[in-house]
Length: 195
Picture 1 (tube, helix red, strand yellow):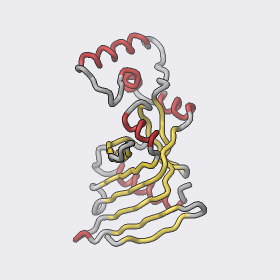
Picture 2 (spheres, rainbow, N blue to C red):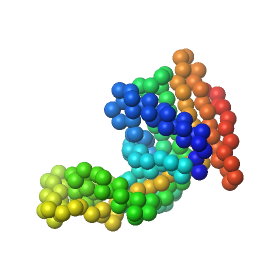
Picture 3 (tube, rainbow, N blue to C red):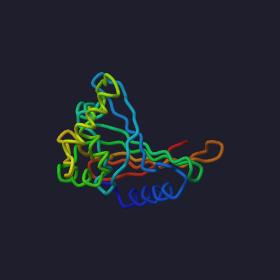
Picture 4 (cartoon, rainbow, N blue to C red):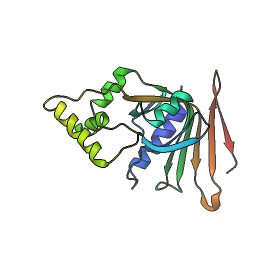
């Protein structure tokens, strides 16, 4: 469980980023590891955070989902270079699927085009040509015409439960400030790191 200090600090920084010129302040780099030990990174969007952790949503048949199934430890990194002297916030921990009710609730808030795309995209699989994908989009638009689009069974959320959080504050001459919070079985500890 994230401490009030961690949550308050993160939420304050996220609010600053939302008030800045950053076009996508909820963007975070997600790093995963495949069965061969190869690290993969991509940008996903933070959709919620509370004391349990951070949530994002994706296709459960995607490469990232397969990697999480093989090795549940992940890393997330926010980088807001438009605020102060630049800030990074890093979270490390275990990712697990959210329950169906939470996935359904979020899916219902998505734009209809994004809902159709969740059905049409075989995310991360090889696509023979763009027309094949456009045909799939058209197929699902027709299938769900005149009614709500249900959540596909292969699409949903992940909860990342951090056990390490770093707040990295940029400074002139690279004299950065780094504050790390680490959890063990019973409590969180806090320390500073050299830049």
